[in-house]
Image (cartoon, rainbow, N blue to C red; front, side, top):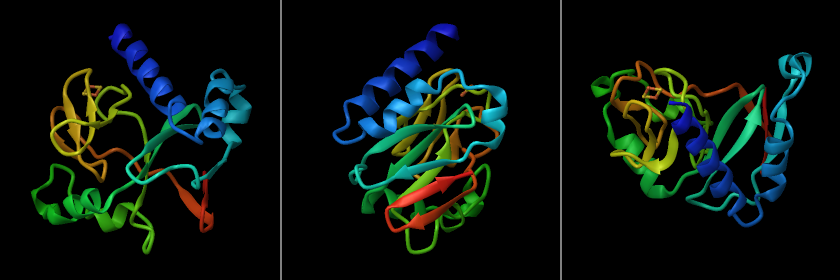
Length: 169
Ligand code: FES
């Protein structure tokens, strides 16, 4: 388990640092690995979405947790909306998990709802995330589709402060 967690972190760090233009987003993640608890409690995080290209997922840190920001493709949005919510383990329409008119942006707390591992993006059977710890598959809306996780990946409180910037928290 410890090994999986370490591997996940390395994967994410590599993936985000490899992303062109995402360096500014990545460094706060690295620098804030051990922030003071009082800072964590208050923190909100602003994220510039401009460098995140279509099809890309980046990870930022918010209140000590990873947050995934996925710039979804049309295919990913269509797949998420083709599913009847009633058929899902944790029924929720995709529309309820994104902001109206900004369906391409999906923001998720990157913590598996089973036992807290960090799922891997663009993996699993549903074009979303896969948690390697015990095999939970999340779809392109971050909803649990298969495996032991009981609920969907959480959507944190966030707002668009401009067309290209969000504030989380
Ligand atoms: S922690 Fe993710 S499947 Fe168990």
